[in-house]
Length: 155
Ligand SMILES: [Cu+2]
Image (cartoon, rainbow, N blue to C red; front, side, top):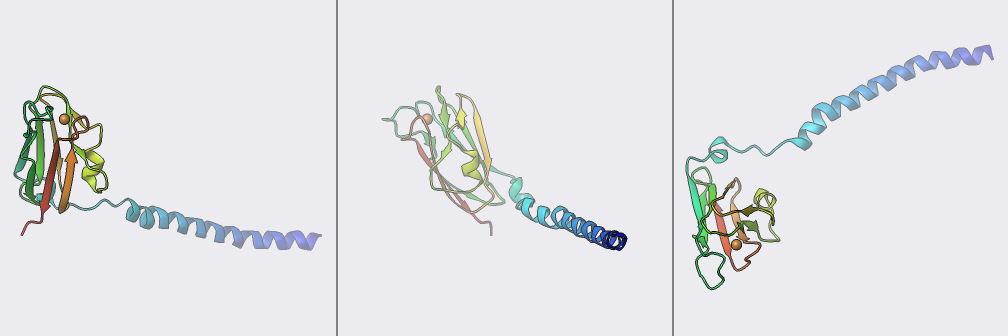
């Protein structure tokens, strides 16, 4: 009985030390290796994150009218990363409109340009595109209003 407890005590020390080392190692791995890799954001070059120029798409007066051809003006724009990849939509109409990304697309624009991305008359919506591609959008209450943004790479 006496021997047994002595044996138990002598193995407890090294086991405890091993447990501490393993848990510290696990903590270190998650804190300084795993988490930084998982939470790392895509690094956007400065000239793309803050382009010097922007392009404006105007939602013209009467855009809500389905028989009026002009709503998003221009309907299609082509922008260049690092040059003018910031788009500003302005609502010059008297009723609320949205810029809503069409379904089936991916990227930050889809996350930003949601179905509830409403602009009242006089409001603006800005978005900086950071990836090349083509994004289509529409107006949620007036689905006949359609627009396209084509993002090209700078040279
Ligand atoms: Cu609309």
